[in-house]
Length: 222
Image 1 (cartoon, rainbow, N blue to C red):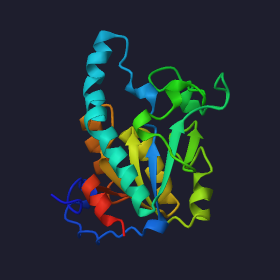
Image 2: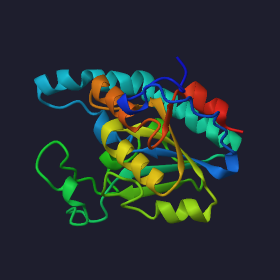
Image 3: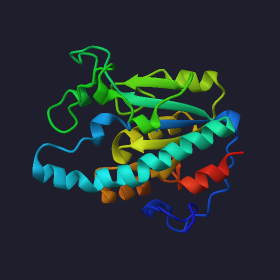
Image 4: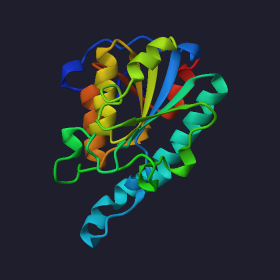
């Protein structure tokens, strides 16, 4: 099944197939979201560790290798590669948004210079590639990414990262609201479970973005 018919939600059942996608390299950026060291450490609690093992397997076996491949392809083709990571500027996290201060799983205190807040080594930025720190889910809301994209003449954004149903989705929706054409690479993304991953892709597909595979995304780059 191709991207034109996959991940169809209730709203788009029977809708016409979208037009072919062409991504001009100089007008396109790859946005890699939150694939950071902190998320690759299994929980200390054995029961929680068991619950999170499928996510870690997907990250190690699929998402990180695929994203590394996508980054290299974009570099070769002249597509701007941009990284956005959750990282606060103050050691005590006073600059974090409320969603990252609330108790529970989403409580995140990741000062920008600490090891947990860094991107995994396989996806490190090179040369003058832009790395943004954010204390919000959306990479647009919490940074000057909107301005940077406009200044560089970017019209299309390829999105990869975690979590599909949280920071990826929030970023995609914000980008769409700012009239960027967004392509989400489904096998370069992950949520806590495959069910959450697939359902969120179904929700955002064709409204806020087009959901495609790594192979398809690479074929779109002109």
